[in-house]
Amino acid sequence: MSKGRTALVTGGARGCGLAFARGLAEAGANVAVFDVVSPDDAFNAIEKDCGVRTAFYRYENLRLGNRVTNWARVDISSQESLEEGFTKFQMDFDNALDICVPCAGINRHLPFLEFTYKDHQDLLSINVLGLYFTAQLAAKQMISNKTTHGSIILVASMASHIAVRSQLCSAYCGTKGAVKSMCPAIAKELAEYNIRVNTISPGYVRTEMTASFPHLLEGWKSEAMNGRIADPEDIMGACVFLASDASSYMTGSDIVVDGGVTRW
Image (cartoon, rainbow, N blue to C red):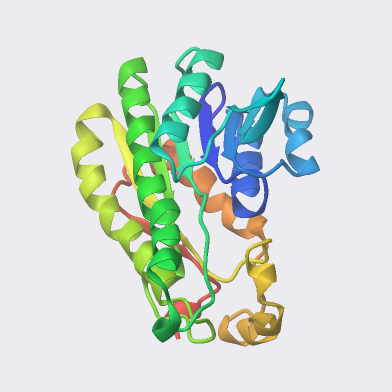
């Protein structure tokens, strides 16, 4: 259980991030979300359904006369935007933070020989740098508020373990490999502050991002031992477990939730 704790989820407007936010709220945590898109209606129902506090921070253009300014901008690929998001979040939640799930990520379905510097840079800025500095800012906040239940759950991928045979995603595999590799090193440094750091590596999940590859969905089913693609709720339990005291002796580890794709 995470009752009374405060969680922050990036990329929580939909997909796995939304499922993680819901799962943590069901376990009793107050939940804040950073994203650049509007939240799904399912997010708006969390506060009432679960009896917890929720907040959503996103990028908006606000026009003041002839001037356009950014309000509540939380684009994790921008250092300034991410820091501003944390400042607003800290003020709204009185510096409380116990759980952080950097989930925001993007993919590109492109052949290795056609990948451009800009394409790869886009993935790195969100999947690696954005995740890394989200975790860093979260850790600083946890240290300052002296939480005794600190848990950072980095979202990697089965693509950090294998080449995804049906996708052209060499750069994505590299970014998720970076996430899995950085986890033990960060965990080692934060152990003295009672902050645990682990990763989740989901397999094929039916989300808005994977919806871009409808021609691959049937093939993905045959790659899983149980013959189906996961829903975000299938990944949710691993996140709730890593956020809770049930995993208090786990740090620097990776949980693969992939229907057995990487095991046969």
